[in-house]
Image (cartoon, rainbow, N blue to C red):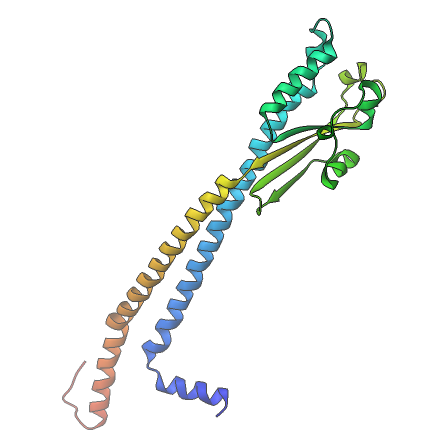
Length: 239
């Protein structure tokens, strides 16, 4: 027996409600599953976007406005301004373990070398220094978000950094942000969505079945029964 013949036999065997109800239920299941997937993705997308565009950017702006644009701060210092600035910078970065200031050889030419953490540690950081374009990476395995922002010489910087030109990349700021709180929220939300989705599927299936049976199937069954009896010669019946 071929597959087509099997479907024909099944089509003749099944009653009308056995054909219609499963199709409606399957449509409900597909709709609910799509809703769960889209809602979960949007929760993740909104959380990650907020971390990228708000939290990371605010942290970079804080570093940029205080430690990077340090000309005005140094001018107010007495004694050894460069040494004092380095002390302030070190104390700040000690408390911000996920923030690093990266420098280029152009800075070394004027102010000498620094410890290894002030230089590019991977190809992404080196690429930002060479291309001058910020990059943001999501590492779901480590549950971290990393942003690398280039620092370009502004006109006011050239008074001290006279060996570079305006808008030339002289460093970068690398910020690592934990996103475990987003992952934890998703781990709580997704099972809840699945539970609600299963409840919706079961409820929809029951409602569709009983609605069809009481509104469509039983009246049709009654009419069919009357027509069959009338066909047998009983003309005393009515709908």
